[in-house]
Length: 172
Image: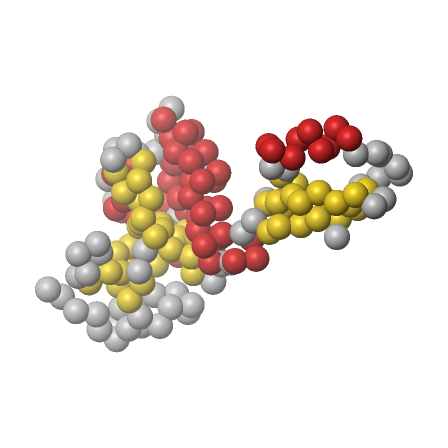
């Protein structure tokens, strides 16, 4: 088994001998290993290629800018070290366009609406749901603030109907 060395190529955000541990996502029984490096999503090129049923070869290298690709050491599911080529979020979307197939639209939606938000919320606890109090005059209702929206527990819906609406709700 090849071991990491100090001459591996990685971005400035990852040290030469750092081993990255991926967050693995599954779509149609195919894995996509993803990383959040300096608050930017990066994806394993070989996994992305399997998802779109196309090998992402030298044509991808030639069609992307140098800052959209990096090679790093990652740990696989068995705990072994593997040298992997990673592609940035913008590079992944470019690859989906470059290797056009109608299914790639749903892959783009999946990346954009599930994978990237899951990566970011795991990294930033502040983006996780928070309990808040919604106040009308002297009445309070417990709500959940998540993704910029307020969510009301289903059991509390009858309470909402009894709330009086003065000039507007306030959040405490």
